Amino acid sequence: AQKVTQAQTEISVVEKEDVTLDCVYETRDTTYYLFWYKQPPSGELVFLIRRNSFDEQNEISGRYSWNFQKSTSSFNFTITASQVVDSAVYFCALSEEGRGSNYKLTFGKGTLLTVNP
Amino acid sequence: DVKVTQSSRYLVKRTGEKVFLECVQDMDHENMFWYRQDPGLGLRLIYFSYDVKMKEKGDIPEGYSVSREKKERFSLILESASTNQTSMYLCASILAGVANEQFFGPGTRLTVL
Image 1 (spheres, each protein chain N blue to C red):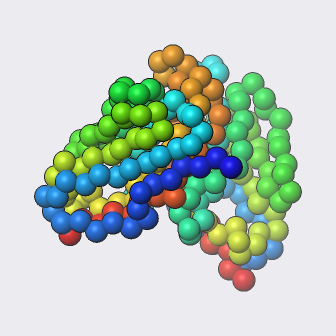
Image 2 (cartoon, each protein chain N blue to C red; image 1 turned 90 degrees about the vertical axis):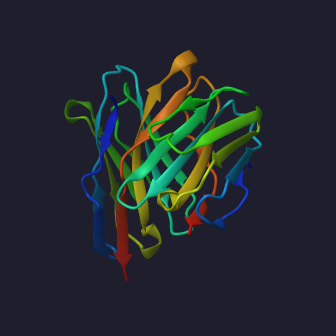
């Protein structure tokens, strides 16, 4: 069975600090996809990134970066120079292929990030 | 702009009532999902649907049913609401056959008294 573990339940930082959110996954599939979503206080989940299992290159998008390491089954997310607007719940998710190549996601329990001014 | 809409942002119902949560997407997606979100438990899949009139149980289907009569609409039904079904309910959709992002609705916060 698929599993996603986000060991950090809550993280609190001061603005401008760097912060890393951890994500560890379990799967028997050789082809899979990993995702990060952000859920701000408004409630709607916002897609941040998708990564497939064959692409281990790190990715950077502005202040956000992602480190995918297959050897440790981890897909960690770093926010550089955090801002108050980064305060949200962040979810890591793993795709699972069902019948007819239809995909569903297994989510971690989320990490609540609070960035204090 | 792609959209998933849910019929209500906030809903208050009484124990024993039948509750309908509606979700509509305008992206012609085949696959639709219902999740509930509770503090410390993350998102848990209740039901999903790969096509019209098709449904499959997710991880926590007990106490719920669903209906998918049209491609764009996926309804979650609480036959007899109970207090332990107080939660945030999120609907999502995705195109079939691809592992792209799921698009989420804004959520319905349901309180059962």
